Length: 431
Length: 168
Image 1 (cartoon, chains in turn purple, brown):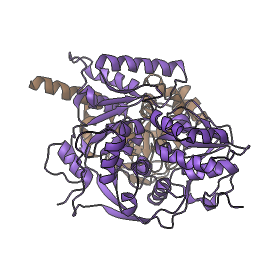
Image 2 (tube, chains in turn blue, brown):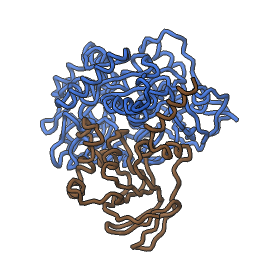
Image 3 (tube, helix red, strand yellow):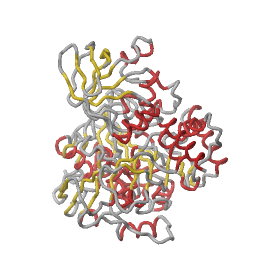
Image 4 (cartoon, helix red, strand yellow):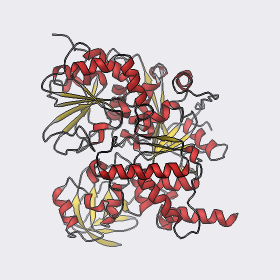
């Protein structure tokens, strides 16, 4: 019986020749990532050893990554003290894959891991963040876990009692129209599957539109696989994956793509033709409440947000700068931009995108999670509306349950910044 | 079979932002998170904080309860009040976190109730004693039973480590 990509990865990581859906395995972990919630992981890790007479010992410090991104720079003494404590733990344990608050190598975990070359095809990646699904863009099996599960992995080096998930094959065909991109594809798919449509499933992406998509776009797709409930999204590694790892992530070692068997068994296949896809908007307050932009165009927007692990990469900023260069953000709205990493920030500076955006009236913030999860900046006022390239629009997500969040692509966000209302970027500039 | 009162009824897709808003995520200790359980549902949160919700009370919800973030505070906050959640279905990470921390979840597709209803919760079915309706319980993934039986993931992992060191 043929295996899907994730079955092959789980078989290898569990020391078996094959696994079937529903088998219970304990896969060895290749990379275990945490962010500020490492503070809780440390507590739980130490709790495991209480009363055992054993010294708390990380299974492999070289396979642990910690990236500060959720609250950078710290918004409160409490966060700053948590971060200080984590730094101490990192120092004592010699965790080299540590990314502090820095303009050169800091940023959002889901950008730092790929761009640092930490993720290779075929790897098992776990992270204490639900958007860990992102790393499937490089052909890894990557899934989110809670802090206690991470503490267990720090101690044991493997996940416990993992059921091999079924896989849904997603065939994405056609050529994306102008001003329509990967974000529109994944919003459309989440709308089609529903918020729980892929729970306990993996979304494995195929088709000519995927083969033609950059790694940046694939990261956007896999990032939001969790918004359909999926355990993970995965793009089988190909020539583009190898190009990205060698040219952009500095990987020197040989890269070995893992591809599905021809007779791999999928639970079902979902076909998406993008040739006539319109820009998509996820309306309040669920990510699967997706409509074409035409249905909500004209709605007033108080705050535009471009950035995050979903859409804060260089190509996203290029789209925004291309639309806003030489123009102004409408006086009735405000625009916040936060690049996904310090490296991307520098590249955007060198390309002139930051200047274009700032001259238009946008505020370009430091790399990090920023306003996405409503913890320390860019909060919304009562009754206000945000239009954002981030990944969630749940009630209260941006810090105020009395506000509305709409999700969109960078092109829609930038075109809407000019007008101050939700705007179809294909109509942008037309009278 | 245990009987319990329904203290809160919610719809589908209750996210972790509703259960435990992101702005309180710097608070991590299980002793401190319960004060922020359902923080944006002001009336219910006030009842919880006033100690007016007895342990074992039930929250009833629709499909995909706990969707969104992996934040474990969403589980420790509910566990701190010893609430039980009866829902049509649960999101994966929330379900796993609940098993790991020992929060009681009951998956009962189609379940409906009103605040104040009494539920009898059994291994195979939930009976709404007030409406008379019965709902089949879907058992949790078999692979997770070992963690539940150990009392959560911390004692389970501890046992595994001690087993390893004894084998050496």
